[in-house]
Image 1: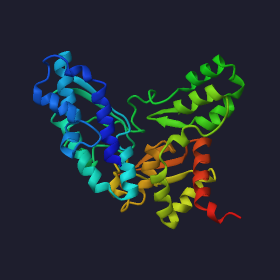
Image 2: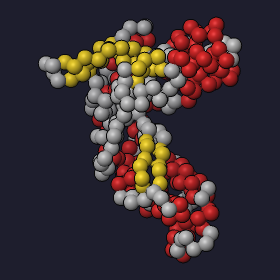
Image 3: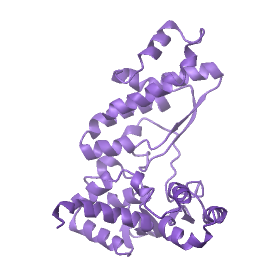
Image 4: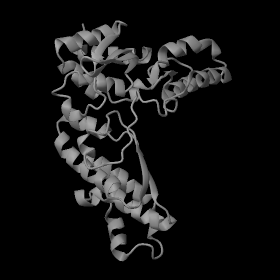
Length: 305
C-alpha cells in the first residue's frame, strides 16, 4: 500500500507536467517512459521518477531544479510499526540515490523529517548534507509562529483576552536558543474556529510513539508517567537516532519525542565525564498532554465499565 501511495504521488507530479510532452523536448523513448509512469509502475520506473522529471524540467527551463520533500520519514514510521522496514528502506534508498546523489540536474534540495539523516540507512549514499535539528540555532525562528506574531494575530481577531489560554495550550516549542514558538497549524485553526482543542496532535501519526511506550520497560513507563504528571525528566539522548536502532536502544524514544515536537528542552548540559549531552525535558504544552492522555485511555477502553 505504501509503495502504491508513493507511485501515486509521482504519477500526480507527472500529470501536472504533461506540457513537457509537447514539441520535441523529449525523445520518443522519454515520452514512452513518461506515459509509463502510473500507480502500477514497477520499482525501477518508480525509483527513477524524480530523477527523470528533474532532467526534463531542467531542459525545459534551462536551469537546474529545486526539490522539496516534506516529512520524508512518515512512510518509514509506518514501515517500522507494521514490520516492513527492510523492504521499504531498500526502495527509498534507491529512489533517494537517484533523486539526490546521482542527479546532475539538481541545484539543491530541502527535506523535512523527525530523524536525523546523517546516520539514516536510507541516506547512506548521500553527502554534502546540512542537518538542522530542534536544538540547532539555524532557522530557529522559522519553524513556527513567534510570541509577537501570535499576540498580533489574537489582537487582529479580537481575541487578545485569550492570550494566556492560547499560550498554555499551544506555546512551548523551542528551536535552538529560541523558546516561545507556537505551532502554526494549531494557531491557524484556533483563529478560524475560536475554540480550544487538539488540532495539531490529531494530525500527527502517533502509532510509533505509542508502540515504543507500550513496549518499553518499567522505567520508560515511569518516566512517561512523570511527564504526564507535569514533572521534567533528565535523560541522555542522541539526536542522530535512526529507526532501525529503536528496538535495541530504548532511550531513543526520548530522541524521537523531542524531534517530533512532543517534548521540549528545558536545559542541556555537556557531561565531561561521559562525553555526552544530558537533557532536562518536559511535555511541550497542554495540547500534547491531552493527546497522550487520550492515546493511553484508548489502550484500556475495552476494559472501561
